[in-house]
Image (cartoon, rainbow, N blue to C red; front, side):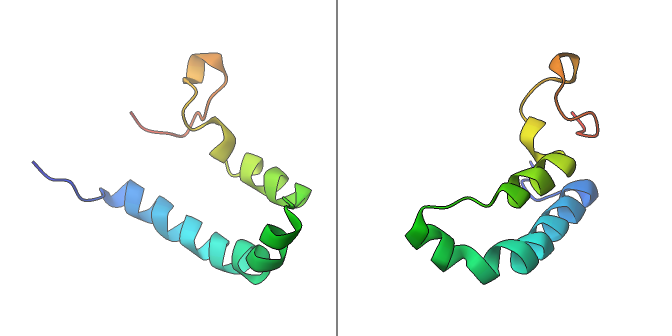
Length: 67
């Protein structure tokens, strides 16, 4: 059994890491100390489809996720 990422999963992982480095990393310490979650981060995550990953498509979940 192969437990590694397939090509689509690897692309997704790479893009999320790139986004986290660019958007999350510069502010994570100050946001953590302030107990703050920036609204724009939530908006960006929703636009990327991250908020519906575990919700089945028939209930409005991520339509690009492969099963």
